[in-house]
Length: 411
Image 1: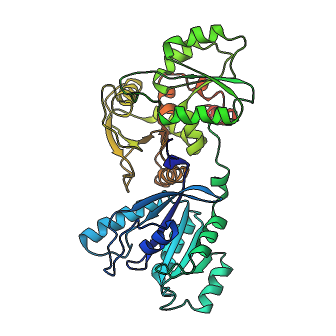
Image 2 (image 1 turned 120 degrees about the vertical axis):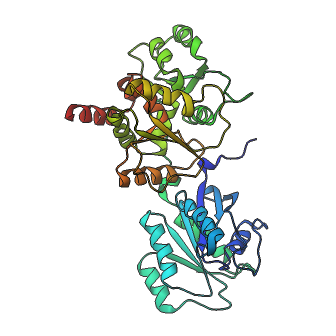
Image 3 (image 1 turned 180 degrees about the horizontal axis):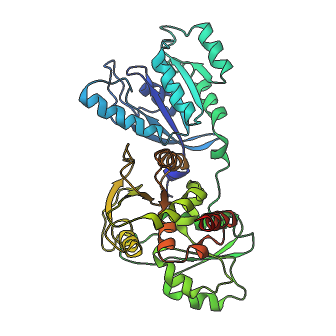
């Protein structure tokens, strides 16, 4: 049985000064020696991840970070890695040693709260020093939960677990659906899954697996076919399906084979809705009309992979965009959690479906794009727009379709 993917886990980030005891707190929470513990400040270098079940919340991912007060050139690199963790943190643990609280801790707390991330303060090493009563009153007045711990002995750790459960954000408990609200119980969805040389041998890719599982959980049916077999599969059905979902790369072929009265979209667009804000992606798609030859486009891939053949993000999307624009564009590609701090040089960001990520990181990137005034679009929506079938691909989402038509009418 496969482990729960990271994208379904509540991301809990541990932040604080060097030697505050973050690694000890993590080890105590998971009851394992996950992070190396030492009296030497700065022992933790890269973020350390530990998946586990935190009942009754469910699957979580703890992320231990390097001290954000690290110094020197190497220390600065560690700090940058830690700051990347902010972008994907659903729930923050601010570890403070011995009751110490200065402008540094206040800044960390402000960083998390500015992102609307719930925070639990762990006053660790409380046997060496306790927080001032005035500070605890101030935190309580700001509705910031706090716990006193001695991670090395386990003191206060059960209370910390309880505080984390209580602080779990509502949006994690009630995650936006992928497809279940579009296909009623007892109804049918047809899933089009091309099998090409980039398809993983012996298995389906994550969005396809997630969609199938959600349909089954919602008491709906699904039929899985290759793109070349779609027309035959539809002809065999006694009644039309509620929805056809395709891999975005087969959009044109599937659109031609699907009768206009049957709603159609792609796995990537379903993820655009679940992971991000569909209206902002719609705005990003319309911004493709403003691209001119020579403009710079950032292609952001969430997961690292070795591109082969007609890679979707490095070959196909650049080709379709350049055909649409009518000239050469300058493409830059990032992978994983790397993302430029300065987005001002780009006229468009094209992001993958982020099937392996949590919603928080996608929303953070969308916010950064909005703050920089740079439009952002999703792979599937970019493909649908450049191929001229955007209206069709948005038909299952009336609000997004209305947004698109409103924007077009205002131009």
